[in-house]
Image (cartoon, rainbow, N blue to C red; front, side, top):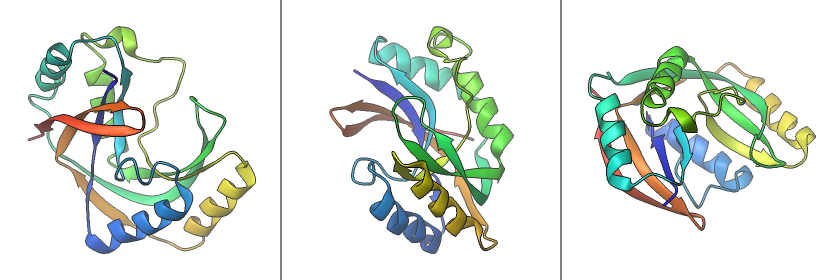
Length: 173
């Protein structure tokens, strides 16, 4: 198994449709996964039962997280030759970072990639050519916007062969 933890944010319908219409045109993972925050990255060597138990334990007293996106940024993908356009939350940033760090604090600590900065984000586009990503980011940022949302649960997923399977959903408080 190739286990991850993602959060599918609750968004207003119009904001969800805007993001999805953009992702459909610019994001290679559009057909694979819904708009999401990745909280825990690939854990291929842990038994499912142990992984679920650890995530559930670490989330036991975690409140839901309200966030707001107000800008897009460019990011160089750490796992491929792609560049990404991310929506990064202004509000909620620190809460998502703390949740990420908490999930990696126990039995997953040896999986925590300390050589890569964790930036909470929702990916809207990816491409090998950075100039095309720059144009996308500029288009998003040319006008003021505020996309509010809520993370009220985490999905433990298995991601193999470009197929996502949710194996457990963990509710936040």
